[in-house]
Length: 158
Image 1: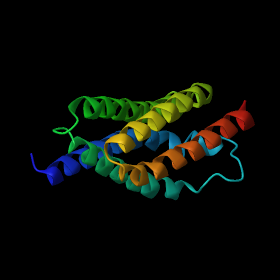
Image 2: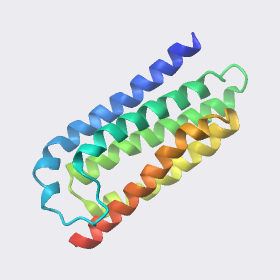
Image 3: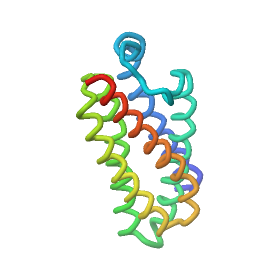
Image 4: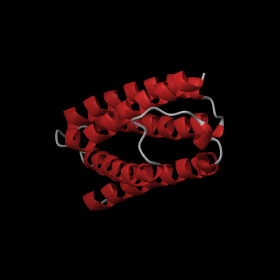
C-alpha cells in the first residue's frame, strides 16, 4: 500500500472518531453545558471544533508515518498502533461520559487515563518515527488543558 494512502486512511479514521464525538456533544453543548459554571479560562465554544479538527489531522498523519514503518519494525509498530487505537477510543469515550452521561467526575477520572495512554503513544511513536513527536505534542498539550478544564468544571459545579 502506498505510504500516502496509509496516512490518508489514518486521517480519515481520526476525523471519523471526531465526528462521532461531535454527534455525542451536539445536544448537550446547547442545553446542559451552558448551565454549568466554568472557569475564567474556558475557551469559547466555537474554538473547540477547529482545534479538534487540526488535532485529529495531526494525529492521523503521525499514525500514518508510524504505519509506514511496519515493514522495518513490525512488533513495535503493532504495539504503537494498538495504543493509538486505545487512545482514540478513550477520546471518544470521554465525550460520551462528559456530554452524553453528563458525569463530570467520571470524565475527570477518564481523562487522566486518556492522558496517560496518549503519553505512552507519544513515546512509542517517537521511538519508531521521531518526527511524530511534533505532531502529537499539540494533542498532548490540548488534552492537558482539557483535563484542567474538566477538573475545574467539576470543582465549580459539585
